[in-house]
Amino acid sequence: MSKVFRFFFLLFFLSYPLSLIASEKSSDELLNSFLEWSGHPILAEERIVHNLSIEYIADLKKDSEQSLELFLKNDLKPDKRQNQKSGLDKLRKDLQSLERFEGVQIQFSGKDWETLFYEKGNFPDSYYEFETGTVSIRYIFRNLPYRPLPKWGELKLQGSFLLFSESGSLLLYKTTPDFPIKDLDIREVRTFFEEDKKHGGNVKNFSENKTELYYFPNHNIVPFYILLLSKILLVFSSFIILILYAGRFWKFLLEQTRRSHKAEVSFLEGKEKAENGFLSD
Image (tube, rainbow, N blue to C red):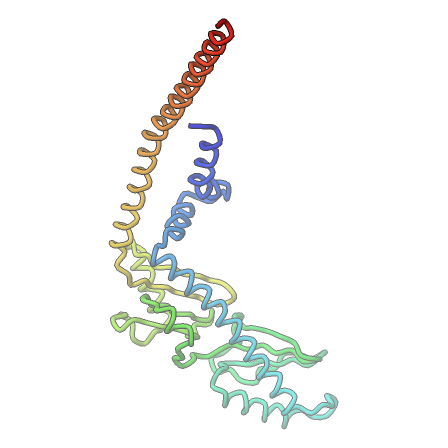
């Protein structure tokens, strides 16, 4: 094969493996990257669920903080030197009526934190916090009702996933009808996750942004591996055929070039002899 052909051959077939090696990932990460690139249904859905949860918690926080800020403006007096007790009582009732927050703390500039409501002892460390003007707010979510997202219909998720806050509140979930845990308590979900993981299940857990995401796949991956094996065999067969016939084709081109050159030389020699004979006559 020519040098140019070999260059493009290596560039096309080795670009992806080389990019994986250059990323300095572990062997498991390299394998997962390759499988995901190949269309592994579990890994693909795992990434979708992870991204979906990140978007959801970001939107939930944004919407919650906008609501908190609105209630602050409506319920508290603008002059902070006046007694805020009546305003805080109204703010407490309004926030509890939302049925979104399990606890809320408030802090005015230069003062200590004050718990507006929380019924489970000390305020946990797994709170979210933001500031608006001279007021700081800490809040934690309660268990939120089931709410299917608009994207679920088009995504056609087959597995189950549950998104909890660090304090154990269930924020978002989608489960299959045969999911074994019915009350969806985080302790039972965590135990089920650990048992499934010990038995080699493809379950996954993400702990980030003060949330716990548990993913339980529900796929038949045998067809995927059959298809992947077929593709690998096809690629190797193509390599073998390419190697076998590329060399022969190159030899054929060389032979044709040699014959053409030989025929051209013979033609020129014959032409020269004919011209010499004509001149001699």
